[in-house]
Length: 464
Image (cartoon, rainbow, N blue to C red):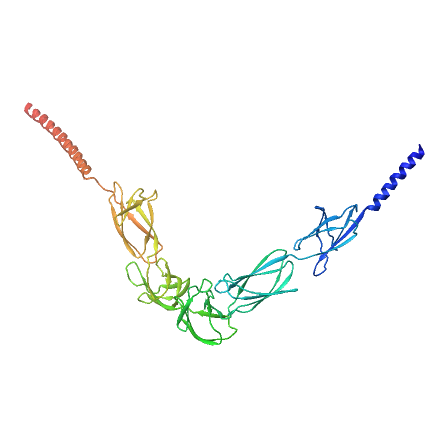
């Protein structure tokens, strides 16, 4: 029994030794065909199945039974796939991957007009590669190049500056776009001479002919031949014209022009509510005092640059006056109508005993404005330098009217009104009537008594 077990163990050991002897390790090395640089992350497929990828040294070890040939496939981005059979007993295989072709496209545009450039010559050079093409009607051209390669590019076009670039291809097609600058391109930059702000719509004249107007940035591109002299003129609304004779050097690319604003005369005349001129009124421009009006109420700003201004006028006894005015194209005659200051006016109604008269109706210049309070007061605001007809009315009292003149510049003013009681005529008549009746009654009584006394005296004499 023991001998049988030993025999079985020996047979199994022999079988294992035979199997181990048949296993084969295939070392796969992957590199770039041209540079011989090891390629990392190349995917390894055996008989259609993914088994792994190359390490940093470009190698991968695959262990197999060694009984049959292997169908090996190598895939890496930017390279053509490698596919072939490897003999079953092969221990090492070197695979050189060929870079995949990619299309490099150039698109060229005029930097001034933004239009495609036709007929530009594009030359592309790289390792073992050199080719030239001419751009077509769309301003573009194509080159079949290798992926992941570095290429030097030279671009030339008639009337434009040459351009040199370097292009690094990726693993797929690539399109690059370039501006070409005309070798006679010149830009005019127009600005405000005081603020340096760009001036839009300034018109540029070259040798007396309009070349166009500036954009929102104050620029206008021009195509002018160098090494020549030109007459340059620039105009803009509300600005003084700029003109000079200018020789263009070969290296000139930008001409800066500063325009000064035009100046116009502006007069301010101040009148009051009575249309009389106000002398000595202060004139302000954007909050800054410029001077005072003459005896005729006039003040002149001789040269005011075009623009928008806040014009103000102040005078004692008058309300402040102001206006925002756009000064443009011509002079201005501005009339400032100054309203009188308003004073706080208190109207006090009193009775003949000097006691406050409440609820008295107050009328000013024929208009009812209110009634007095419990203290006999009524307050209102009235313009100064004016005479007002002030009236107070209340039942049982006579209406009272006065003319109140409020002096110019007065801030507070009081109008006292003393009201007399009003007597009713019919009440007076009735009172007189009552008194008369009483008097008549007294007279009748007195006469009656006297008559009685006289009759008594007569009888006494008769008896004697």
